[in-house]
Image 1 (cartoon, one colour):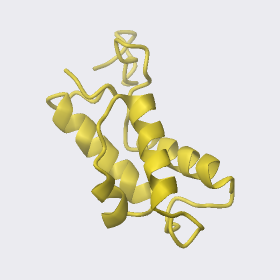
Image 2 (image 1 turned 60 degrees about the vertical axis):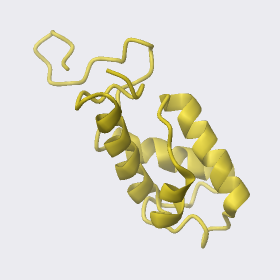
Image 3 (image 1 turned 90 degrees about the vertical axis):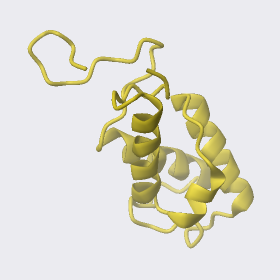
Length: 109
């Protein structure tokens, strides 16, 4: 989806949530991980658990991301890909699956 102004930039989702793409999904995850851990030094490829996270904090990150995106994220994704980069990729895939390929960030078509 484009904005219709000749730009290839994705249009905002109908619900006001920003669209997700290959750059914004990992950036959103990283922002929420840094905020949850209160550690701005955590990087895109840093393991959440090695950076001081635990399962309770992982649940908090997942709930925050779900609230911000409207996308259901199984907690198992966090354990199989515990970096912001990996979880961002999973978030983008879930968004694409939920929207029939149109990534809006709301998990619906």
